Length: 525
Image 1 (tube, one colour):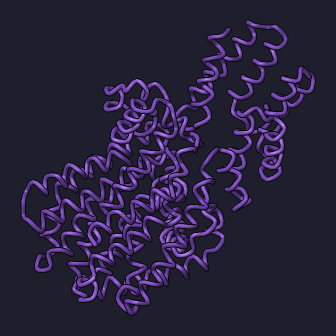
Image 2 (spheres, one colour; image 1 turned 90 degrees about the vertical axis):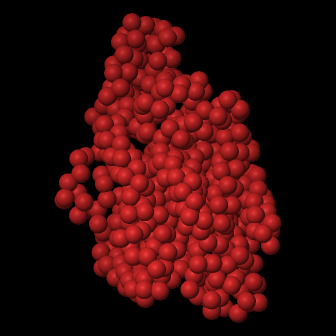
Image 3 (spheres, one colour; image 1 turned 120 degrees about the vertical axis):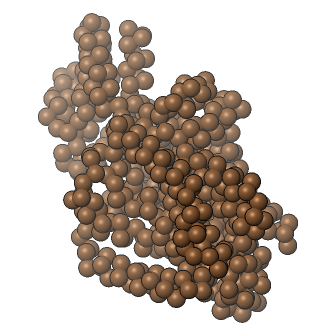
């Protein structure tokens, strides 16, 4: 049984995610995973600066350096390491669930801890919510945060079991690794405190807090670093205010319900979930929040005294959600790649009633069908991450309001030399966002390449009057001048484009991409 508990999840992961070996670099992969910092392994830059210009994640960055050293710029190697890390995480998760179930005061959970943990691990590993963080190279940080968070809790469990300080010290070190893999690991210190309170049944919460002080101190320091870097590098769009905080509460209250819904109904996974309608459904959100709060309150109130597994898992889920509630004025969307750590606690919490009450023979049959279904859904979902075209086409098909995906698809067609398809997508975007001038801009670019300079200037004039980044306009104007053999004018426009892109560099991912194109064009001239 012990060997099966390790081999079966790993084999299942290999079957589902072997497809990624033929996948390309997609979406933000080129921006965040490639480049001189990673390819040349500039360790000083990685440890002393935000290597990709807006995040300080040296653990993530070091793994990308390893990928470059081993695989060059072959995406297959990068994908392999993502799958490998997911396998490590799932193996650690099996150990964590065995500890949780074995320590449960419920006799059936404790008696069947090993195979119940295997069941929940298989649901976690095969769930379609995992596809994005595993198949998307840029989500490496989420995988690393998951691995080191789980390693922290497993090490801490070994400390409680053996009382050897080496395990305690290791758990403190691993907290730092988790925090500098991704900021979503910030709840790990509170999770350690909750875990200690669950395992040490005769101890008061104050003792658990004292034991967790080193973890809390490291977390506070790391959180301060992340906030400062987010503020100075453009990832935080305004200074935090009370009014801003209050305005974000309705959406924050909806997010725990949303991830529960996506776990229970894992269809139509997408890169972008549209939350703009949340405020328009205040009554529905309020009702859902009330029901969710009552259920969680009942679980916590009834389970806290006896320190039940249900209370631990419910508290863990709520704590793990803290950094993804968007309570600070940052940019993270609601996306599958943010669900991994909360899912560690949500999966067993949802399955707990079945583990406790269903007859074991029926439970085996039902769990087999459930895992097979989830595995098939994930297997079907993985190919949507094969290329930019498949990702953004799928996202827009799932939800026609996913305008960011439509915009990304339009840009992807343009990069790939398909201007007609690009302009069709930009035209759809303009119909949905009338103030968006990208259709006019790229029409001007297309007219320039067809040497229809009058039409190009007319479209460019429309773009200038609309909501279009200036560096785009200067780049198109430079191409027009170059086509008219006005080399000095083209250089002047490219320098203006470079200056405007530099001003937008921290908050505009395309400005970072186009800066490389501008620099290349200037060198050629």
